Image (cartoon, rainbow over all chains, first blue to last red; front, side, top):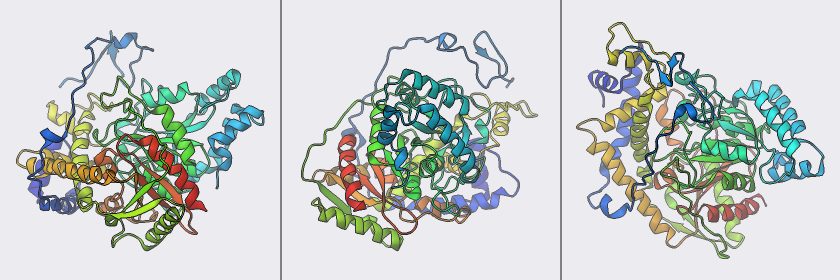
Length: 92
Length: 467
């Protein structure tokens, strides 16, 4: 079960803010879901060994630079300000 | 079957015999959309001008084969160059796609006509399309009911006869469940069979693009065009399977026919299984012991991956609000710019953030990944002796609009039978069963990368169950 302090901590980590009056429903809904997923702890997973069962290899392609400006069309979509192929964003 | 005239084979015949031109068909459907979609609301955007231009071009070229001239809808979390891609989120309200997703590029090369973008639950998170930031979509079979989700728009548009086929995405059932709710066919390919390049990411180890159409034959035709290895998606492969076997062995897992499954759904699917058995396919009862943990496992993995994927909507990389806040601090700017997520999206971001956070990671995320391996193992063992597995697609029939919106967990439970295929990366298809009431879908799951074999068997079963 989550308390108010937990909810605020998670919101802070997730970079989201709570709307007015949202605490109550978030606490209720997230606690209900957490309570449901707790059942995963019942499963004995002591024998599961990822190393032996996942024959997955990384696939590497050539690290070649593709100039965005020379792609099919010259586009700066959704960005109001741009210059010389760079996006201008706000100061942070 | 309804929408018979919009099946790919029948349209190709009309084009070839000169009964209609691609432009005539396109204009007829655009008119139908104007008349019908005010009520159904399957489209987020109708790309009328682009569709008419494309249809004129196709008529000039001629040579109607494959998918040429076929009218389709693309779910709005898949990029179509120069068209808005909102993923039904306020966060991407003004985002126009700068390039085509690989699947769209392939469809365009094959000569389809894109009529528009389909509604969905925000960022494909939901099972009813009620989480769209813009409006909910209605089920064309019964407009009081939800069309399912998250590909509710694409399924409803096919069911309402506004397009021949559509592309959806399926992370936990988002192609199959709405297809089941709307009485059409929906196919989720094996993970890796279809490129995800240009698809707005939700949970990257589960997401897959899949077609929705009026028949198994039609989803197969679309799948054959969109599948294949893509340099731009490192998880994509070019593996192919054959289907030539005469005797087919079908597994019926007991865990999918338990208490809690709607009686009508159970009866309809059991009746279909009876027909399959009588038609000469061998049906056997099997057990997939970790089924009851699949949904919890999915919730943790999906939320964890979603929370990291959605970190990019921060006002700097994506979404153009770019409000810096008063403090001038970076974190405050992020928080301010991320204020437009809907309730469901926010819940998943928060649950995922929690499951990945220090002190909880091993108990939730790692444990879920281990359980996922046990679920995969269940399927691996079962398929040693089976060709396909049959289950209901959804434990419940379409529910009323607004009926479950206040209880997120109850909507999650509707994904119970579809999430295992995503966790194990298997191909799975939903086919409508004949009913006298609301639609019920039967789900067929195949072995990983045996998509062609699954589709071959599905085509046989589709014919058997309507008899």
